[in-house]
Length: 341
Image (tube, rainbow, N blue to C red):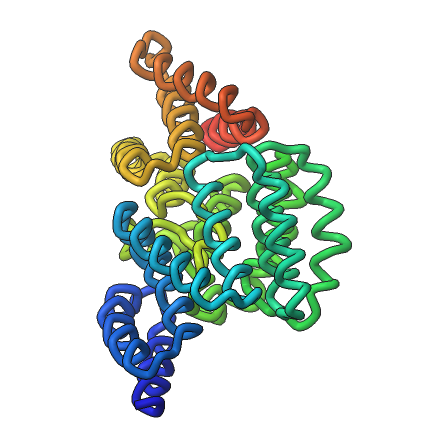
């Protein structure tokens, strides 16, 4: 039984590609069955949280909540600090997705402390990713600059492609187009096809798409659009729900704006808004409302678009309630900059 369990587990990780998420759900169901018989509570907990992420990728919030509840039960039963750490990381990631920001800094710090207590090598990288995504929402962005200059090198051998893209993404957030272009060219020099197609790939491509659209890089934008199009209905979710990066359709909307395809931009924005609402992702829904409304108002002859004005106002109001004015401003500036190029 243990060998069969390990074989299923190995197959599960073989499927760690952006195309493999649906198959992982089938394999993970087998792992849960064999793991329960083998009494492998550590494996069961890990798989529950992987299933949680896969359910969110497909937009299944209710299913993800069930998986998290099961993982919490397993962590309570095991009483092992490692289990508590991983569940706290995932719980914090879901709170970031929903906009449950009360005590979020303490939650991120608490997960780091738990992980370091058991000397888990992923505790620092996971902490950095959650801090990065959280600070991009609420600011100040100069804190992220310090993080990228100092903390990322301290992560040792962590080789996630998302780490390489983070400086370019931050430059785009700050409106520093020339710096973003330089960082983009550094990454593109190796070719996007060489970026590992692992569980970080979709998040990496979505971030690159936003940067490409921002700097007006038509050649690389076309390549990224082709790569992302098959995943248009998916959500950007990092393993164990470390963080949520919004709908893939949002990245496609930005690329459509950059190539002046109004119909595609509107279609992708509307799909993004609908999926973020269904997922209960209030911060991203607010950002997308502002982005879509700002885009519609930027179109010639659309200044009297009352629905667009309402979108912007609703997004701004929700952004103020959540304390993510920094992200709201970034969205407005990004869309205005791309639309005017």
